[in-house]
Length: 158
Image 1 (cartoon, one colour):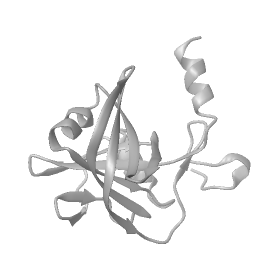
Image 2 (cartoon, rainbow, N blue to C red; image 1 turned 180 degrees about the vertical axis):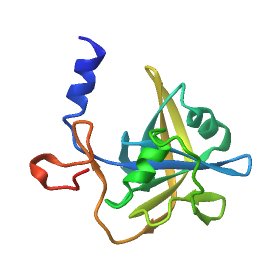
Image 3 (cartoon, rainbow, N blue to C red; image 1 turned 90 degrees about the vertical axis):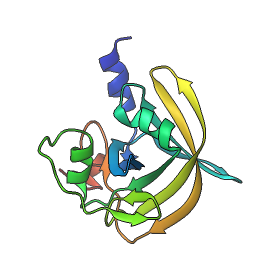
Image 4 (cartoon, rainbow, N blue to C red; image 1 turned 90 degrees about the horizontal axis):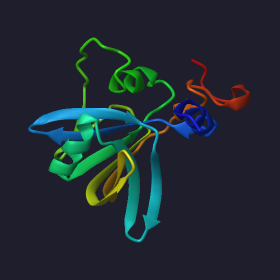
């Protein structure tokens, strides 16, 4: 099967949108990701999938910690910016908890230390042990078939 067909099939799974952040050499860095999931309750573990060619890949290996920021339906621009779809430099007003940069007004921020990592094809699965949670009210930003939307028009159309 070709890559396009595989990507089309994977796009049939509606997901939330996250921005993974870390503090690398005293500066906040972020990357949009929808490959995120809960893994374990005891210990509390989550997983994110990061491409080996992404700058964030080596930064997570070096820092050993990251935050997963689950975006609200009003935060499409953050998703686009951290995915490299918006090219001009922006000053992001990060919130900080300890050494973790957080996306402001995300509906959840999950602060983790790297528990383990596993190479999987051209990506690495980073398992994060949850250290702290920040929760806010709001609706999630969703992604389906390459669009910020949910099937049947139930979500946010953009």
